[in-house]
Image 1 (tube, rainbow, N blue to C red):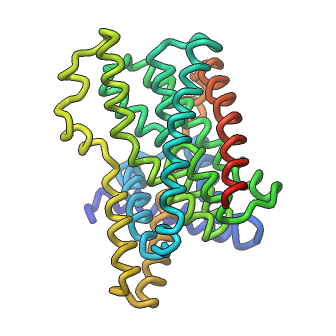
Image 2: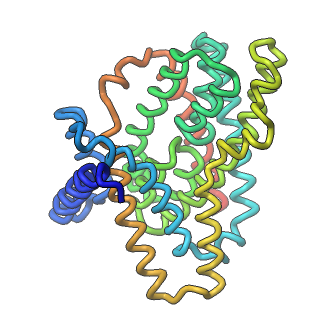
Length: 332
């Protein structure tokens, strides 16, 4: 490990260990939620020290590592059995979410076209990652990117706490909660945290469904690039940026690692002890990832977002989350 990363890594470890200690005194509270909350409080009260900044910036690497390693714990037969239905639900949810948010942004809350599109793809697929990828293909203004990203981050923070609470109040099964969270929450980190905060099974389903959604990013980016090209806002060659090479550059490659390890484990190449060790390893990776996620959430940045983007996403989320919860409870 690069020496400049060690202080920040230890900083993340300290936050995670303190969070686990706090959570151990309150059995009903999941340590991942405590980790993010503690990181949020430290980040907004004291900030991230300069000496820790490089190491703290590795939290996305730890999230992707934890997701890949988690693949060893997922039962392949369950994935195969639910695969067609999950894929259908993901496609339906992505399409309906994007269309709903686009409609609300344009015709109800009168938000600028580009901002509405970034909000739609961010809430429909994979949060800020989708916002950034789409903004590059349509050459969106930096201010609109900031509004969309801040709004998504705000709802990441809210849903991270709200979803497990709603799930327990409604007495949802782990499978239903995991699929519902994976279908309707925004970014991968909060989805993973909310899922595992509910239960181990819920976390696995949430992660599986969310990764399926993430894989839709290439289709969405190309669709928006074509749309804005026809509107005369961008150049065709620039918007697609090399066709398949551009899609590959924005594709979340850790999804392939997750699938690969899942297949290897389910084919019997790993012993039960090795799978248990990998599962423990993923828990530690998530600990570092969520400590960094909490530190990265800035209250001041969230406060800069106007009320119309917030209302757009709020109404859209309520519609989609309620609808998909009814659908998931019907089929699972």
